[in-house]
Image (cartoon, rainbow, N blue to C red; front, side, top):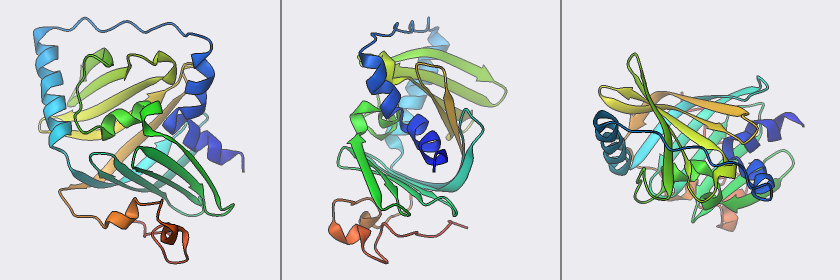
Length: 223
């Protein structure tokens, strides 16, 4: 039972963020960007803002080595679903400005605001990597482009790093790192974009969501 929070809490960074606010953590410095860096950030913004739907398999690895696999659905703006493969009974859904963390085995739901997590940057209607988002690093490693950032007003929430295939630009991975430098990494594979999803996959405020056979039930592995 202890493994589940270790998988989910670092992914969302909700609990670390709330704990860190009272300690007024140091604000990570913004990256010194070159003209090439700014051009790449413009490319990243354009890619994310053009992305409407994405479905992929994911592998999630926590700082303590705990791992889980499953299927992810993203429907921008505002909606996301993480369906963990058995034996993990976990479901993570974002909709209407809230994240739902649901343990099907315990029938225990927990909700928090999307805006209180760095992962919420991905779900914004308009992604802008400036102003209320501070970019701390932009790195090019082989075929990959890595961009690290945090919400400017809430440095204690932690840092979000997005990893893209550089040419053509495609989101392949993200990592969240909390104020104690604990990292959780999510790697995507078998990526499909531009599909249509049933709205019920994300509408957990509908009571039917939690009924047997409802959209809170397992939706398949995506194989």
